[in-house]
Image (cartoon, rainbow, N blue to C red; front, side, top):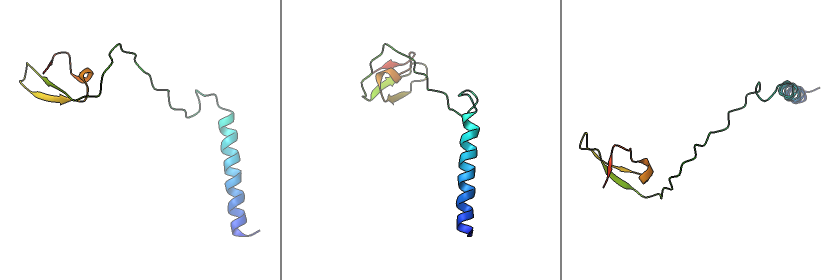
Length: 76
């Protein structure tokens, strides 16, 4: 058997062994990333730049949506 044939054989064996290893695992044990959690909100935010003023510091800043403006800030 040539070196190229041996390499293919080793790769096939590794692939099968890896598959068999994961088949024996439950989803909690396998390396599965958790599903993202989505927090429902009642806010519907249009994608529009919103200028706001921080009364504590005097800072004026642009936010990507009205929902991104912190509660302590005043929308301009």
